[in-house]
Figure 1 (cartoon, rainbow, N blue to C red):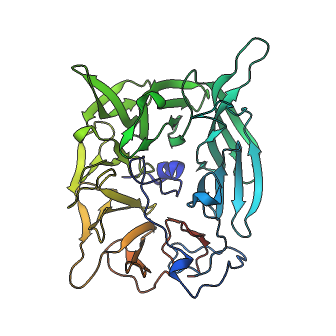
Figure 2: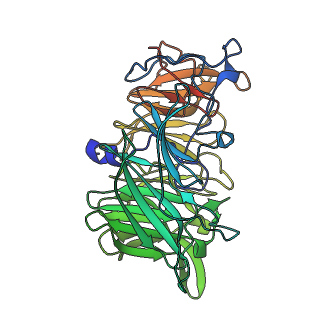
Figure 3: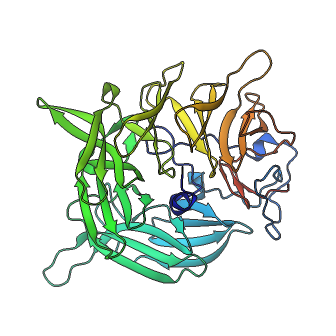
Amino acid sequence: MVSKKRVAIVAILLALSSGCSNGSSGSGTGPSEHPGSSPVASAGNKKPFDPPRVFNASPISQKSPLNPASRLGECSSGDGLLYCASGAGTISAIDPSGDKQKWTTKTQLSPNKNAGPGAGWSAAAPVRTDDLAITAFGGVTEGSGTSKDRRSLEILAVDASTGKQRWNNVLDVGSALVDHLRIVGISADSIVISAGETTFCDWVDTMTATWVVDLQTKQIRWKKDGFLAGNVGKGVVSGNIMTKKNNVKYTALTGLSDSDGNALWETATPNHGVTGFLRPEITDFIVTSTCGTVDLNLLDPATGTALYSDKAKTRADLTPGWDCFFDKSTALICQEKIVNGRIISIDTRSPSETVWQFSSDENRTAPAITGAFHGIIYGTTGGNRKQAVSLDVNSGNDLPDAPVVAPTWVDKYLGITREGIYLPTK
C-alpha cells in the first residue's frame, strides 16, 4: 500500500516536465479558453475545496510557474502559495493573490561566473516536508589567498511560514556540473539530488551526477557520476545510467542502494532510449515510459521487475509514449500521448491491473488529461475550441460540474495552468 506519509514527504504537486525528463505533465488551459473572462480577479481569502470541482474563470494571477515567461524560477505549490527557487540564488514564498512575496532567503554560495553550462546559480524546485521548504543551489565557494573557487552544492531548509533558515550544508562537488538540479526524493534518512537533463531522448552522461545526502549528518553518503536519478523508494534510487558491454556504450535503467550506492539491478532500455520517470512522488513503485517507445511500465524499485505493463497504439518519437498523473491519493491515471489517447486508471494499492479504461468511441471522446487531485481527473475536449471537463477517478464517468478551468497543478486552494492561477469556487 502506498504510504500517505511517504507520499506527503516527496509530493510537490508539481507536474514534472514531460518528454524525456523524469516527470510528466499535460498541457494547461487558461483564460483563452473562456472568451468572456474578465481581467485578473481579486483573490480575497482562499477557501479550501477538497477536491475543487469548479474554478473561477478569471485568474488571480497571470504569473504562472508553468510559463517560463513569468521568470519565477523552479517552483512548487502548496497551502495556497508558490515556493520558488531562482537563478538569482533565492528561495521565496509567493502568495499569488496580488503576487505578494511573503519571504525570501538567499543561498550563501557565490554564482558561477564561468560561461556555459552551470553559469550563475542553478536551483531545484523546493520540496515541502512537514513545516519546511527544502531546496538545493549550485554555485561556487569562493577561494581565499591562493585557493581557487570550488564548485559547490548547498542544501537549504527554511521554515515554510517565515523563510528563516532551519539548517543548511554546503557540499564540495569537485568537477561535477551542478546544472538542472532536481530534488528527486526524500526518504526517512536521506535526500537525493540529481543534476543533468535529457533532451529529445538523448543525454550527456558526463554532465550528469546524483548525490545521496544523509539527513542526520547532512554529508554526502555517496555520489554517482553519469547517473541520472528519477525515483526514490523502498531503499532504492532508480535512474538512467550509461553502461558498457563488449566495449559498446548503452543506456540502462538501474536501481542503486540508497545506503551505499551499490547496484541492485540493471536493465538495458529498448533502442538504448532514455527512460522517463513519470510520477516520482509515488515511492512504492516506479512509473516509467522509455523515449521513442510505446511501453508503459510499473516496476518494483527493489528488483526492477514489472508489476504492470501496457503499450500505446502509436509510437511517440522523441518522447515517452505516455503521460501519467497521480491524484495525491490512490489513483494513477495514464494516457497514451496521442490525440484522444486511451486513458487507463490504476489503483496504487494494487498496481498489477487497471481499474478502468476509456477509449474514444461513437458516444464519448477521451479528453486530454491535464491533472488530477483527490478523486477528480481534469482535462479538455474540443480541439481548438477547448472545453474543460472533469471525470470521476473511480469510474471514468463525466462529473456533473464543468470545472471551467482544467488545471495542471491543483490542490484544495489553487488550480494552476500555463496561463494563470485560479481559485476554486465549489
